[in-house]
Image 1 (cartoon, rainbow, N blue to C red):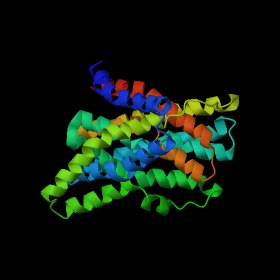
Image 2: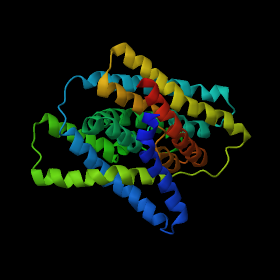
Image 3: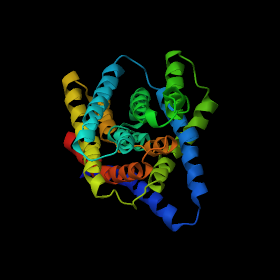
Length: 298
């Protein structure tokens, strides 16, 4: 109960974003601009501000390993959807990524709530390591239907780039001048609240999956919100993860699907309608499953 109450303000921001987009006449251009501001400016500043302040040690290696294991397990389970359900190749390629891609905005908000700057830094490291893995798998599955390059996708991902720059800055022992640190701190303070509002504004609850699509959709949701956290839990226990790293890898594994999955699907000519529904469903279900996972682990 305490865990659910702790996360309630963050989930309330998501619901507020959903309501504001539908009840206030701000226009789609406002919300598109807000999402770009968060994605390209505010969250990179948040990651840089946290990672450059955190001592980097080899203790992060098991964290990355457990995250990769959980993601790889979810990918393997997602592959079973093709023979199990009546689903077209393009629809399968589109929905496949919904079983393992993760919403970094929500993850950073929860990590900050649980462990402050240390949680943000740990989630940033893990997300930075997993972004290439997730993009390679997602783009590779859709590649036969489009011309998008994996490396071009990574080169345009500001969260991945911010993580790489922050790590290099940290490992190089470079100082962050006080005025720059204060400037980035101000941007970081705005990142989480505006990011969660953008997540809510992007929810699409209308539309239908069709009778033939319900089984596959339910299966992908179970893989993302149940199977992937179970795999992470077993792997984390096996390697002996504890403290911040254990909490962060469990949050990472239990996160709903990222909205970037829809953007990629549309860009590559995939089944955008079903992906949008899966992203929205996983976000709403995640509001229930994430507190349950964290309460179970407390």
